[in-house]
Structure formats: C-alpha cells, structure tokens
Image (tube, rainbow, N blue to C red):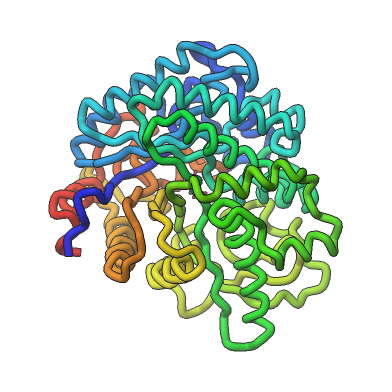
Length: 469
Ligand code: BG6
C-alpha cells in the first residue's frame, strides 16, 4: 500500500521552543519567558530567549525542510508576538513574521498547519489568572479571529490548542509548568472547561468566516492499558481513560462531558463554574470540528494505586514524563514494566499500543478525521565523523508509521503524520540535551544546521509514499 496523495507527511515545532527573539520587534513577554527564569524550574536553567533562533533563520530552516521533502510544516503562533499584552493592540511586526513563514512555506509547496496556542501566553493574562479567568476565553477568541483574518487566505489547517491536559495538569496539579500551582483540582478542571469553551467559540467564528479551511484541536493521545487482568486494575484503567481521554475528547467531539467524570467532580466539589450558555456553545460547536490532532509518544500502563495518600505532589514536580506516578486523585498509578522498552528518558516505545489506541478511538468517536500531529523520539543523537547518525529515531518513526499504515488499512481515518520535530528545539523541561529533530542544531558552533540521517530517510519514505514501510 502507498499512502494516498492527500495524506500529509510533515514535521512540527512550537514557537517558544524554536523562535527565540523573545523581546524583539514588539513581542510581549510570555508566561514562559517569566517561568523559565525562576531558579530550578527548567533543566539547567535553559530558556527560550534564543532557542534555535528560528525567528532570524526561518528561511534557512524552511529551505532545509524543503530539502527533506516535507509536505507540511506544523508550527505555532506566539500569542504575545501578535498581541503583546494579550488583549489590546496588534503588533504588525508579529503579523509580518508569520506572513513570512507562511509565504516561505508556500514557496516550496509546503502546507502550513498552524497551532494557535502551544502554551506561551501573554504574561499579563497569566498574572490575571490565566486560563482560570474567563476573560482569557474572550481574549483568546479575539486573538484567533485576528489570526484567521491575517493568515486565513493562505492557511487552511488550524489547530486551536496543543495538549490541554499537559498545560492544565502541569500548571495546576504538578506545578511544573506556569503558573506553577500544585494540587489544585478545582482550578485544573476550571482551566479545562475554559479551554473547551474558548476552542468551541473559535471554531464557531472560524466557520462563520467561511474561509473553507479546516479546524480542530490537538490532544495528547496516551491510551491506558491495564498491567494485567485483575479486576481492580481494569477498573483503574477505565478511570484513567475516562479522565485523560474522554474528559478531553468528548466535549470536543460529542459536545458533552463524560458522566463518569462529572459525577466524580460533583462528589469532590471540583465541578467547574460553567454556565448554560458555555455548555451549549460546546454542544453546538462539536459537529463543526473537522478533525482531531493526536500527539502520541507512549501509552500508560496502569494499576490500582494502593499507597495511601500518595497524591499529585510526588515526583511529577520534576516532570520527565516517565511512568511511576500516582494520578492526582490517588486512584491509579502508571508503572514501568519489565517486558517493555523505554527511551533514555523513560518513555515507553510502543507502536502496538499506538495501533490499539487508534482502534479504541474509532470505536468511541467513529470516522472523525485524524492527524498525528506529534510523534517522535527524544534522544541524545550520536555524531560520527560529523554526520548525525540517529538510527534509533529512524527505527522509532518507522515502527510508528507502520502502525499508521495498518490503521489506514483498517479504515481508520488518518490524513497526516507530523514527526516531532522538524528541527532540534528546546524541550520545555529537558533543555537542549533531548533532541527530536530531523535537522540538527549545533549549540557549540553558531547554531549551525545540518540534516540528520533520519531526515534523508524520511525524504525517501515521502518520495515512495511509504510503499516500502
Ligand atoms: C509534547 C509537546 O508534549 O511533547 C511538545 O507538545 C514537547 O512541545 C514534546 O516538546 C516532547 O516533550 P519533551 O518533554 O520531551 O520535550
């Protein structure tokens, strides 16, 4: 089988992780500009002030992407670059920058796939309560409208939010992302509801503009599997999926919240402050979603948590994303298993679980169009005689692309695959040490770029449309 012509082979990035130029050309300060400078918050104090300087080197970078043969580039727009204080004047230089990126992509026939919110929020909005404050919903919707208006003639693929579960949970349960709040489920759920509302309103507006493109959201896709057949572990796994899959996917795709979680929230007094009007916007917008984006790195292996009082404060504060944590409510824990394979950062490598998870999604949500908006291997790449021979990354992507191929053969509606990442970039909490890119960035040598072995390998896959996978 060959991948069809309308299947997009791409790669992705995010503004804070690549751009740098954090205070140039009128950009406002973001929550991450502030948070990353608090001692102890990031790996060796790394931050995105310069990142990999994509802001100044985007032409060179997009040329290299074209050399790899990328059909699409997923990147995010930095909200504070467009509206420095989040809810006021537009920064024309910011608009110009993304116009340039888009035009540069189109010059090479690369389809721009744009994320509006990949975590960098104007800092003054964060100071006013960030996503717990309903004013942020309106500010986001305005910002989204501005982007649709400015770029929508050329951008036909829009993602509103990247991975709500990550910025909400790490921001309000683990305290590892801004605003660094720990163990506050009430706020955590409020954030999720406010984001779903903002998403729904942005979708409605986009459709009203009749730009004839598509819009959706990107979620973490980390399906949970029980470690064994014990009933208590199966129940714990159900709980995990209800919380981390259904709570996020149902409001967007079905237009309502899963009963199971709603009941738990009522019991614990965690129900968000939600109005009838917000609930109906969510309902009305659901069928207007054109697709869902999935970021898949690893599944969850789940067991019942039986250590009393083990709660979310735990090790997630030094978040590596590896298993070994109890859920915020203490109901389940994720575990490492002896018969599984893990990356250097302890993330399980599991293409089979990827395929099983996709089957689960089809069962729950039917034929909704899906894109894999992130998937990749974080590694320290070997350099031999000046060449970056990232064979483990090739193996990783190859096995996951095979799963995608199999899924398509089973009529799962997948329309694109975006490797994380197009270019080496700043990992939020793991600095520059953990590399993901097809393009290497030499931090000891003027941030020089070079295509890795994986880039040449991906080029061939694209040329053959995956026939030999
Ligand atoms: C995803 C994010 O959660 O995972 C990316 O959308 C991130 O922004 C990626 O870089 C990998 O995470 P990490 O922690 O390995 O950098």
